[in-house]
Length: 292
Ligand code: UTP
Image (tube, rainbow, N blue to C red):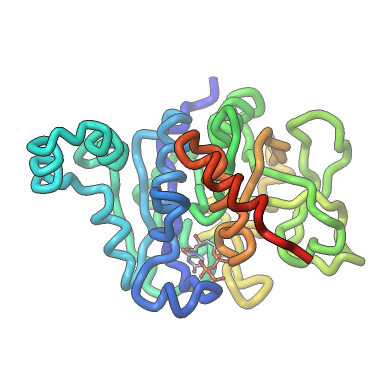
């Protein structure tokens, strides 16, 4: 029987250079969509998928992300005295049980694969999830839950995959698959950011993974790859010929690349329109814009 996935690694040690100067003194993952930081969306999704242990791979200057999940007794008392129960409920969303979050340091930003490898002792010998909080996914069923279900069926590594414009392949890890039908497709090759002319498909890897502990073994000896970074994709690719294989899951939902300015702005509009209390105002404003 496939072991239940209860641990998630959230690599948040990157430099966030695309949002400079904002990220000079604030972690990228604290940027807010409407009124919640990106990290909150990631944690909500993980909890909905049954994750109970969260491993933050952090670096210098990321303290605000850990503080965010602390309790705020003064604030709670003040809101209670003022009878602001709706705000108290909102605040409770960021409450985490004691001991649920562990942090581990990545001393140098050597790549996503290296960041995940830093968490190896906390993960142990069990399957685990990896969530990149700057990929935010709007969906009816949380993306990670769709993935844990696929993992239960296949037992192998499961990667969230989506079709991208064929001339955009050099921005993503790209999957090579024998059969593109069905939601979970068996992967027979992976290549990091290929030139469009060399890309094996237009099926791109995005920031959600369910991985077997064998990926950590591969990372033990993983050499730097594309861009001189230790790539997670390279370590996952080594599992393709293993007994359980690697699967790309074409998840249901819309993914926003909140690590890029355009993606972050699109997400702000989409999540704003999804909030009943904001929808009419925002939609009315968008209609007044003269584009083109
Ligand atoms: P990105 O490629 O988005 O890099 O990392 P970044 O540093 O966050 O942002 P830019 O490109 O400079 O604007 C993808 C994810 O991997 C983490 C990042 O924190 C982000 O969640 N990461 C990346 C690490 O934790 N460590 C690394 O060495 C590299």
